[in-house]
Length: 338
Image (tube, rainbow, N blue to C red; front, side, top):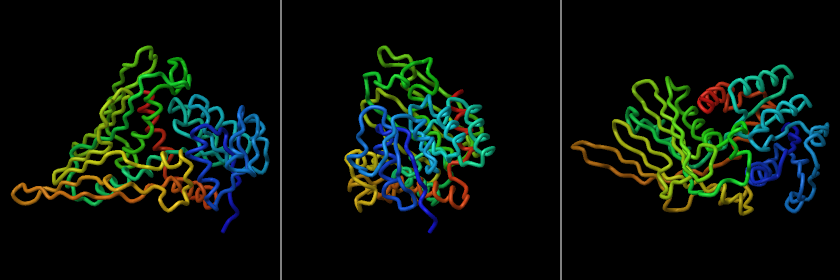
């Protein structure tokens, strides 16, 4: 086996604590060496051997580090990723990679010029519900697809304390750039680039400067319509995945447990990690002769965000194609910035 990839994290907020550090720590293909903690030094309570730097420049000056995870506020992703590339590091960049398609093109171009890998972190490809939906679609049991609906909703009346998410003059702000990348990436991963799309946004929270609701309508060949929706004032949870085809329908709630488990301190090596509880099954309805409904309740396979880190390893060590491609991110940014 090749040597583990020596890795550094740019921040240890919620993203670093939940979505990155546990995987870099437990995956034998990586070695979590260092992190940036500007204020409180919390990481050492879980990772006693970690180096905690006070500033990003200190992290980038660590010559042993091969990979930098850029998980700072979204409006800083592009600049910090470019800075890490210039320091000779490979980068795994949190979504959104940039505020514009021109910015993300600049990032990938710089990576090619410096012979360093630029990889964008889209963990929701590895949610249990999405994986179950993908499997149902690819099985062909629904017939020709007519309509696909993906949703991610919240109910949060208060404005976020993270100012960069709430100011209209800050790049990559609002719900569109926060949850939009997840939903758009799910659609692109399944169906590719749409023939056309329409974007609708709205502001409903008192005092908000940025959209807290969005809806994308994507059109694909064979009259397939894909709808992506998210809102911050949705009181009743809607199904996260609905697929209607000529032979049947699929309905699934968003019941992936990984984020909640990681937030409570569970490590990805735990046998219960990523396993949905009973009662979380998706509903598959197939129309049979005489319009009789055959209903099946189908459990999801476990979700596993570790898959994205495995892809990072093989991209760096074996020059494999990273599954979230440059084209995928370019198409995503075209829709986000429209």
